[in-house]
Image (cartoon, rainbow, N blue to C red):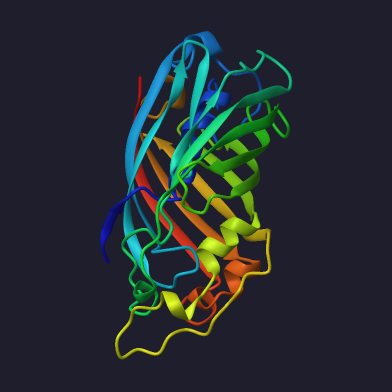
Length: 298
């Protein structure tokens, strides 16, 4: 297994940091989250400007649809500076320019950007590598979300959001839309959980770039090429679920400092992403993720 930089797992590691800022004055010392908190928002590190930085290591597929797994280094930056919230996304970041109210439903509205390195490096499969590495895509577009606080207890939060992004680097040259729903809640004053469900839709240009198989592109010697495959057009490429646990190392989420993140995830590639021989013959429709990380909030 090899180590590489920048992974789709980054969104999962960032979920904890985002969730902490959404509901920071949180659980009491026991597991039950009942009754009023003994501190207020103004007493936490998340009042005003703050920054969270961290790093982690994930074990994830070498490309979307692969059955080979590689270790990935995950950089994480999240915070709020000058009224602009900075939140991690898969391989990138989102800037939210709308501040949530002290109480009630909140709106996220901003810009998302990411670097997509699918099949751009570290391809482990000996046949897939003979079709060549792809260019990295730089994707940018709007991000919108709605936050619903205090759904099942006074300190939890449900977020429904969607990112729409276009490649501006001339790689796939297409568009993706990524809806997601997440539920965040403290389990104790030092333990936090986030469960998220997400999917991705991509247009015909995206599907053609990543999933088309063409004999003319094959450069292998002594290995039979894969059967040709022509994508059908735009459609969903994947759907998955991630479970994240955050552990504050001094026992108090609200005061910042060092924290650990543990993540487990599963996704299923769909449509052309599942039917392409890169997945159907050389890979797997089932994709798994495991990650651990450490961060510091100040």
